[in-house]
Length: 331
Image (tube, rainbow, N blue to C red; front, side):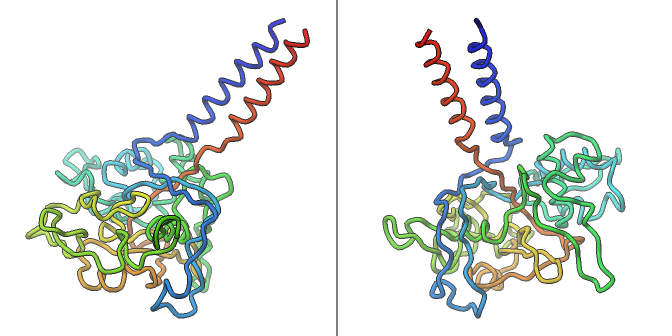
């Protein structure tokens, strides 16, 4: 007699918890990148590139952090992972520039640097994604797999790497090169309303962004130096947002992707605070194919991507609910 009501309650529970799990942010500010199935870059949108193909096409919507992962995001991960960390726990590839050790031998953020971008190894960045994927459990297995299989973090005799891109079913991951290009440069209205395309530079611009403090008209911290600038905190240049609302796509930190290069190195994108003219003229351009980095070292920044909850749960709920309603009518 109460079976339909029981099924209905179960469906509500499953739908609510599935969507909640899929949308968990863990304090990150995610923005949605839409326009699923967008085209890739055209040759004329990569004027300085030579035989590099087309990039930026992504056939699904996704969410990506508005800024790079910050020191305040990284500190809880470090504290959770430290008991299982092999090697030097104080290496800059592990802690980044803005986290050190206090007098109690604990990790601590440099005063005022809570929002500065973390720059760490690719391996550490992927372990962060594993930790998020596994709901931030403080157990060794939670850092070893889920989004990335760390058992493949090995090096061959010839010096090539066996590191792989994200695993199927990953809930949080490093953006691919295509996801990054789309999030940074693609604009559904680039050439006018409904006329999609790619900008040449970050910040929806076809010219280099002006360097300097935001109060002086600057739109990137490429000319940052400790003598004249405050700390390079994330999100200081809201007027230089991408079409999707991403910040710090110029300056901030060079960013890891999980796209593999020929020998297993990982492709990097963008420019770093303080890189000055080189970052402004070269690294910021969409057609400047960024070098690849060793996944074991070479600290860089990174963003995290997560999926958008699909309509399947809601659709299943609706279908079963209608079936229950019809059955009741027959009775």
